[in-house]
Image (cartoon, rainbow, N blue to C red):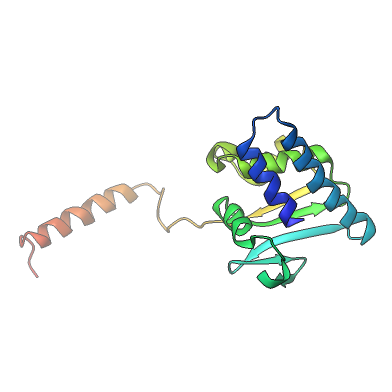
Length: 168
């Protein structure tokens, strides 16, 4: 599945929107994931990045187990987009797969547009995909009133110290 997903992402980057290659790539990735859901009776498939390793349904995948798949490329794609886990739930629709591939092949900042993955999926009515993203905490004090004034004072004191104007 990872191989077909990577191929679809590359085809989205290489071919115009009207290209049959895009449609074939989406269909291939979708059929593989649908087959896994149906034949293996799996309700959900979680693909995660943990410590720069690929983990599928809580099982760490070794590069030697992924015959001919460039795991590093896939990990780079999801890490560059602050994605920790992508969950594919049973009932996934082909159009949902097409949306995901489009998002993963497009510029991250333009795709998210200042929001979160959860907000984007909700806006697009994508219900069988879940994306857990990396959350970044803000530095304590930033954004609070007076924070910039405090920084300016610290900068001024540092300059005076460096110029020898401040007593040691």
